[in-house]
Length: 154
Image 1 (cartoon, rainbow, N blue to C red):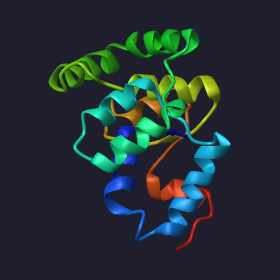
Image 2 (tube, rainbow, N blue to C red):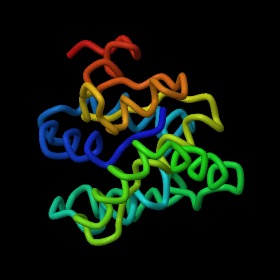
Image 3 (cartoon, helix red, strand yellow):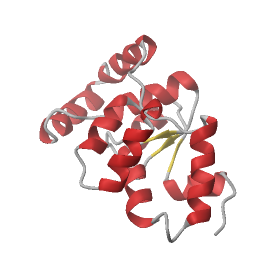
Image 4 (cartoon, one colour):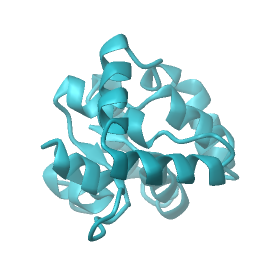
């Protein structure tokens, strides 16, 4: 699984470690096994967030946030070759002060044949992560669906 910043944020804001220990035990197990990954750009967005527990956690798990590979960079270029995706992603990037992990999340999932986990919703004629994933035949699910896929019940 390749996690988007918003999926990490929801996890850390809604499922407190002290209140949901069995959830975190399962999540930590997946992290330790290497089943969960993300990108350096997500780490940068996390570090700009106001969720201190998430920032501290991410600083202890930097291996989950690798620098994009050459193959991933090439795929980011492929995403940008679609004028529709390029225009909206660039606008979003400018509005966020230059940080935008979305194309790197998608590229990592494509190159590793993994599922993107995001809280974004597909929009008609949109350039959200689910739209781009669908365009490139990459699986994309919500955090709740991720929990269902893992068979988690609490």
